Every structure is written in structure tokens, then in C-alpha cells.
Image: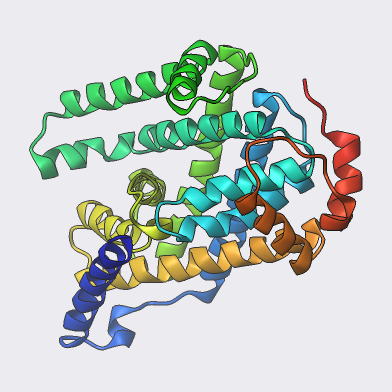
Length: 336
């Protein structure tokens, strides 16, 4: 189902582009600036480093301390799981790889809850500049939209409170017959993660604006900086779409059409499709570095294999499975 959804969205964008090319040439449609493209890609790498840092901070608040190198490796090795429908393998990968360096599954699982809550909350905050245009497009009162966004953010943040999270674990435990634990993370510490995720999204949005400029699309910095984070969040929420594939690109084109109503639809479709290649290439660079940091391809395959086969019990890290990581892990990982 997810693959069909992604295919339908991509087909729509390709058809829009092809129809535009029937009326004009690609050279007329595309005004390309290589320097801006390079700068956008470099800024994208800064965003990806910031994303790994956000995982490091979320893990710290959940109760364990890991190094930036470990956070980068875990975040981007597990990231490939998002391209599997349902996105469950990205979760399994993070929990399993974290376990390999001594982080209990209960801690990494709680960090994943923080991450998910803050991704949605941060992206909703980033989407605020788009609300007036979305209101006009959907014919929903802008104040009502703002109240709705504020309510969702408040509910998500309250749900991440330790007491509420523990109640959820107790409920799951009664249903499954298993016992779950979580750390006593302070609510102010959880809230302090929000500015970090806003920085991550701001870097993402700014890098995309530069990408748009490199394609000759006159996307204004404000509210254009909100386009890509909002589209990425829509892809994140739609679980059926692997990695948000198709859904995010369709959202990019749709949101840009509201900000740049005079832009050619084919040009916007081309940029939306190119943004996927641009992002995937950036993630591939980060994945390659993460594999190297972890100890090579074989160590990663062993770690991911165990992530799929192990249950929730904590196991001691094995130095043969994470060559360059295990020694560092034994020195830096500590339960707080």
C-alpha cells in the first residue's frame, strides 16, 4: 500500500513535469546555479550533523550518555530503516545498535519517544508561517488553525511527561504481560530539547531554500524556510510511505505553489523530485561515514542482524561487532 501511495505521488509529479516540457524546453524551465547547489548540499550536511546531535541529546535526557560519534553512527545506520514501509525498522535499528554500545533498550526506547514527539512538535512550529496561506487554501479560519496546532503540540509534549509515559508503559505491560521501565526524566529537560529540534528544522529549511534558488525558483526565505520541514513532517506522519517517498515530494510542490503562485508547475515538480535525490545523496554520505565510524560493513550487518533477532533484554556490548565503537562505548556510556 505504501509503495503504491509513493508511486502515485511520484507519477503525478512526473506527469506534471512532462506536460510542462511539452510547452517549453528544459533549458527554459531550469535556470541552474551550480554554486548555490553546492552550498545547499554543504548546509544539508550541517543539518544532518545537527540531527545526530539531537539524538545524542535525547538519549542524554532519557538516561544515558553517548558520544557524538556514537550518536552519528546509530542515527544514520538506522536511518535506512525508514525506507521500509511502516518505518518500524528504523526504530528496531536504533534500539538494537544502541544496545550494542551498552544503552538499555528502555533508555533508547524512551529517547525514541522524545524524538518522535519533538519531530512532530518542531515541524508544527516550523509550519506556522505557512498557516495563513494554508487557511486560505483550505477555507479554514486561521485562528482555528493556530489553536489546533497549539493544542496538538501541547498534547504531544504532555504525553512525553515521565508520569504519562509510565502510565502508557503500564497499560502496554498489562496487555502484553511484560514489565517495562523508564527513567525519571525531568519535564524541563524534555522541553529544552525543543529548541534543538527547531534548529535542526531551520537548517533543513534553509538548505532547501538554497536548493530552490539553485534551480531558479524564486522561493522567498520567509516563509519558504518552512516548506521542506513541513513536507518532511507530513512524510514522517504518513507511516505507509517508506521514508515519506512521494508524499513529501508532493507536499513540497503543493506548498511551494501556494508561496510562488506564478511559478511554472513543471518547475516546481522538477524541484520537488530533485529534492529527493538531493536529500538521499546527503543521507548516503552520512550513512557511509556512519558505517565507517561503526567499524565497517560487516560490523554493521552483524549489529543490524542482532537488532532484528534479539528481544528487549539488555546485552553487553561485544567488541568484535563494533570495532572502533566498543572501546569508546565502554568509556563514555553511563546510566545517569
